[in-house]
Length: 144
Ligand SMILES: [Zn+2]
Image (tube, rainbow, N blue to C red):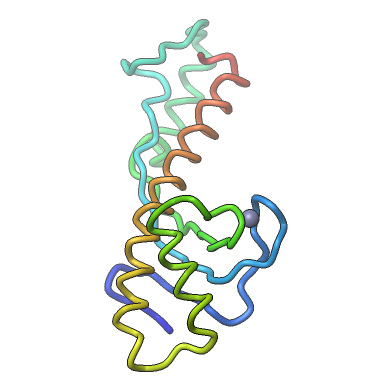
């Protein structure tokens, strides 16, 4: 089953294990994700502690390569019956899986609504995770 509207791809067959608990996933969703990379050198809210000239030219190269602009990527979210429990949109989708072992054509519309609601939550989480990763990376680089 595919949903091409937004570049989103659903996979029900053989989804990967959950990255959080290692248990079997129920559903894999792939979706495009665009974020703006923070300004590495000029201005910005996180000025370098040591604006060495060598540093600046390195960052300029990155900026020239589009590093500080919009970055497109594909992200994945796995529906996990353990980790996703407790969030309303996830609970409704999980309940659907419990009730419907096989997906009937007549239930596709319902399924689509549930997946869309869950994906909205999963997307937010993916974005937040990226920001955390990004901050950790900058912290490791001594930029925070
Ligand atoms: Zn899990």
